[in-house]
Amino acid sequence: MNMMNALERRSTFALSSIFALRMLGLFMIIPVFAVEGQSYEYATPALIGLAVGVYGLSQSILQIPFSLWADRFSRKPLVVLGLLLFAIGGAVAAMSHTIYGVIIGRAIAGGGAVSAVVMALLADVTREEHRTKAMAAMGMSIGLSFVVAFSIGPWLTGLVGISGLFWVTAIMGVLAIFTLLLVPKTTRHHRNFQQGYLHQLKQVLQMPDLNRLHVSIFSLHLLLTAMFIYVPSQLIQYAGIPLAKHGLVYLPLLLLGIIFSFPSIILAEKYRKMRGIFLTAIVGVILGLVVLTFGATSKYLLLLGLGLFFVAFNVMEALLPSWLSKSAPIQSKATAMGVNASAQFLGAFVGGTLGGQLLTLHSTSTGWAILTAIAILWCIIGFGLKQPRYLSSLIIRLPEEDSAEQTTQGLTTELLEIKGVEEVVIMSEQKVAYVKLDKKVIDEDGRQRLTQLFGKELVI
Image 1 (spheres, one colour):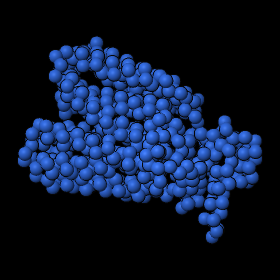
Image 2 (cartoon, rainbow, N blue to C red):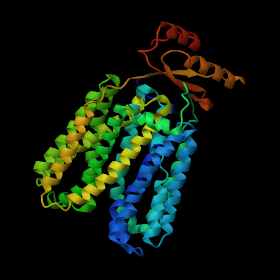
Image 3 (cartoon, helix red, strand yellow):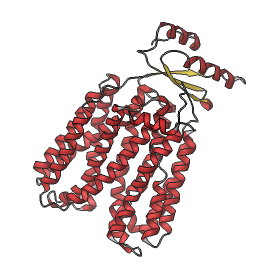
Image 4 (spheres, rainbow, N blue to C red):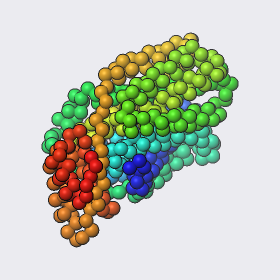
């Protein structure tokens, strides 16, 4: 039970790859478009900025509709639709000769707002005990794609031009669809609470702990985006590192963050210290920003501050999706993730705007002090979070005979009647089901009934 099974590893790899391919295509544009975008007809600085930012705006607006649908319908077709929109948008931008065409293409690409759907699908196909590991792998794939994109984006643009770079993003969107074949087809069963879309969204928005998690992802990505706009000029000026080699700074810091995040994940999940690790990570962000506030003009203090920030960022990036999936209502898991993803993209949008304003300041330390104040406010809000509840998962093998579907339906109904059983996820092609339950709620009668249904004594 300490290791993910083959199905979980395969699904985690596939869904992390979808995130990585999308983000790689997206991030490669950012370091080159401010310069290359000037070659488009009708281009102005404001329209170039809009071409970069409109993707995040589309994502922010459409995450919630996609996630509401994902709580009612099969998640995989929605992911395919989102990836097709991403690929089509890349193709439209690639064929455009005017900045307006690029803006339209980027808006279409952003319309494939399926980040929350992918995370909800990952939550379906992983057991509760391994959720944080799976989410961490996804978070790391995003971070790695960010660094790789910033490193190869300028080089690739030199080879194929800016329109070729957009074609590359379209191809990556198509490739991501094929990785989805590695993810099993799932059918979710839970105690169904029939409610309208607006009521479902209202229910999610009225949960204080979920709102604190939304504030957390907003703050984290605001700080990250602002930092990546604010810090490059300081790496050049104070550390003497040219722009082309900044990826060589970010990559070791990212790897350092990954190394530190694994023990944190084990502590958070195995020993149920999620709240403590979460608050420690926010303090780590604050400490990194404080070091930058007072030492950004020193090469080594600048790198130390960035290192602290990256370590804390990686830990937080792993914890937040897992915590969200534990705290969200079972029947509204994707909706909660959709609101969270909207907050994430909105944070990146605000962070980008704020980062541009920080560049106009005469004092480097003032800019870092502003970001530190935002992190402290985040810590105050996040302090009210309660420890999430921890579900456990049992694996049950489904019958192979012709009447398997009818037998499975009957078994699912019986399982959901047991107090403490929250959800049953069926993977029919693999003849496997995950039974997700709350050990603190299940009683002796429930234990005996599970023992009868599983045909063996269960330790719960």
